[in-house]
Every structure is written in C-alpha cells, then in structure tokens.
Length: 307
Image (cartoon, rainbow, N blue to C red):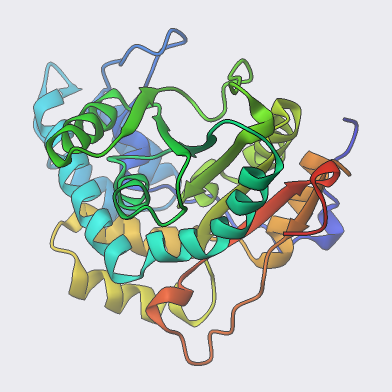
C-alpha cells in the first residue's frame, strides 16, 4: 500500500532475541517439517548473545547432528501445556471474550450466517477451546485454529475431540500471503502471544495481510511491557513453570513485547485507513495477572465506529 512504519515514532529498536522454540522447528516451502541440525540451532542462539539458551539446546539429544524429533516434540508439548496453564492464570480467554463480544454481537446483528473466529498461531488451542466450550461469545459462532506446527495442531485436534468441543484446527502459516478467509465479512481474526514472535520486520506485512484479506475485524493479544518485563516476568515464570525452556521463553516473551505506541504504528502502517484501530495503555504500577495481555483491535471502517 506504499505505507511504511515511521522509525521516528517507534521505540528504540533492540537487538532481536530468540525464544528457544524458535530454533527447534522448521518447515519447508510446502509446509512439510524439516530436520533441524543441533549446531545450527545452537549457533543461532549464540549469535543473538544467548549462551544460556544455547546450552539448553546443546544438551538435547541428536542423531547424526540432527535434533531428535521425539525430544523436540516432547519439549514443544510440555512448553505449550505450561503456556495453557499460564493463560488460565492470567485470564487470557476471559480477556479475549471481553474484547471480542461487542464486535461479535455487532456482526451477528448485521447479517445472516455464523460469525467465524480464526485463531492464528493457536498452538494447542487452549484459548479457542475455552471460548467455544463456555459459549462466551454467544450463539452462532464458529471457531477455527491455525498453526504452522503440525504437532501442535494434532494435539489441539485430539484435545478438542476428547472434550467434545466444536473447534476445527488446521495447519497454516499466519504469514502466508496466499492465506484467504472464507466469508471475510463475517470473520474475526485473533491471536494470543503471536505478535512478539513475528519480530519488527514482519509486523507491518502481517497487518497488511489482514487488511488485504478484508476480514471484518481483528484482535491480536500480546504481553503488555512494563514492570513485568524483567523482574515480574522472571518471578511469574519461575513460580508457575517447571520446564527450563518454558522459563526462558516466557521471560524472553516479555522482553520482546511491543509498546502500545509501536503496535498502533505498525498496525496503522499495514492497514492504512481500512480499519479503526485501538490499543489501550494498561497501567503497570500495580500489575494484576489479567493486565499482562492486552489487544490491538481493528474494525473495518465500513462496519461502524471504533471498536
């Protein structure tokens, strides 16, 4: 759209750090899983000045220099199960319902047919499953989870089946420019904890892709930087999580988080004038668990006033 983020309005760029899970999984152009060489994963972490994280990966089993897939799978599932417990503790599904319900109600009243919630980077689908199971968004809502990691999609599908929750989980990449949405006029795209994973270089294209898809609205929830970013995050993740990888990646998530101003700048640059945008500042003077995440919201301008 010929719009770029104005560097003068962005928080000073910090060197990009990595979470350990970032280096343990790779997909080819066709979406198929690729083997990951342990030395390559370790070097990526060392190059970003993360020797502790590199040591954790160096200790993982490998065969012929390639990380053992069973060990990687066990790590991914263990971390995401702990993330689900953390999501429960900080009330992410409740925060999502609170922000999404007015938008869903508006769409439900504006036409016929179901409203579709598409969760990008859904992991094992905890937030989506809770929304569907509790009916927090009302009747006539369909839920779809999308993640590039087939292991997590399989786990989410199994859990939804065991819990008899009507959610569909699919393998797909949130950054795939060919990704299209069925009935975008009645679709709301959401995510939780994805934006900081994308990194600065991918944020504007991510929002631009949303605008190009023409979905009715979006709500991307991510951690709110502040007092929790260092000491608070360390305490939270070391008291709530047992896995060393979970502790490292959880603390790193807080450090990689974007300010409200940055999120609005990137969203505006990507979406142009197509969407009303909102991202509330949340005080961190007396942080509460439910304030650790907050959304950047977008509502298509032809659908009414700001969300």
